[in-house]
Length: 234
Image (tube, rainbow, N blue to C red; front, side, top):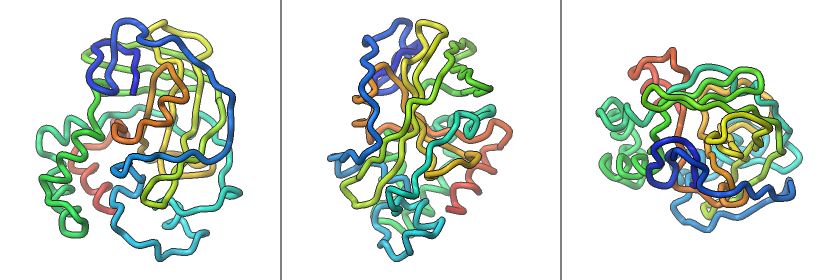
């Protein structure tokens, strides 16, 4: 993922200047394919068989739904004060989650930790969303942009399930703030998010191709142990 926030790190991190010129592309609410076999499928475990009806909430969470079920969503669905889970992965707080996944999945606990190390990696430790304002925090510094809805895209993953990216484009704000932000939170219609994966950068189309790095945010009010409980409940 191309980013534009201070301290650019890896595929998603943040730099002190815009790394790419914004390349707004025509909005299309269709299906796009993600070719990477290791794509994050938004169920977190790709080995689970599709044994749910298309209309159930559980099936939607796991990425099985019809196009006509997808609805536009406002930025207010993600309003709040959010913390990155990456520090909890690094300090071992999420080890019970990795062990739990190993009991039901196709990787060892260390294998899952490696997978999420790539997925969760980010230097943006906090995000605050209020109205049309999105403020990115890193090491005590912050940048802000104001964003307007730019539609959504339905992505089809190689595993066979799908996800929806809800896209917002910057209308004003700090130059360093990314031109586009894209939310994915396992929902496909208006609802308040309880956590989300966020993609950001200056190339709308390129962000849609990013399927291995998906910084993940939970409410800042939750402790590490509470986040572990939330993750293991899914």
